[in-house]
Length: 236
Image (cartoon, rainbow, N blue to C red):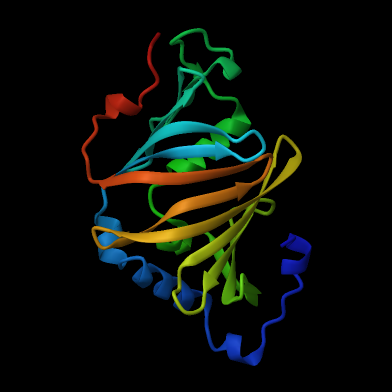
């Protein structure tokens, strides 16, 4: 769905009975509840990324830990590519960023912006005061009735969340980011929700942006403890 169409959604009388705050509350409850979600201190995910066009697959291990730490390792052509954020610096070990061997380099601004956003540990719905969140209207997606919420990160960066009106889980997100003056739109579809220690987690994400990809989780572990050094940029 293009954002032009989204902006034209009209709120019918039945939808206006719901508010953005009520929908967010139901979404949080459906995923396991605020107490359980805030009780998670770290998330370790292992899975496989598939590039749709080439059908190439890459094993990935991603670790996120409070407050906003992230490290992701991808095996690409028998070489380990690493992205990291220690709360201050976004860095990478990657031939595509000019690194040689195990040399770590600071990320370019555009890539850093995306990684820092990904490192934010709590879902935006758990931080509603940080954003402007509005109920745009209702729609139908894959035969399901959904509510559409708009989350504004800035005047030019925003997300549209499509929330199932029965399960209250996210089915889709359409994101717009302006990076170096260029507008990039990415659509993410969330599928195959599974219960992990009382928390519902989408185990498959299909994305269409600069390229089409699919990420499928093979294992997920909560609350494994990592040292801060694990996320820090190596000194080379």
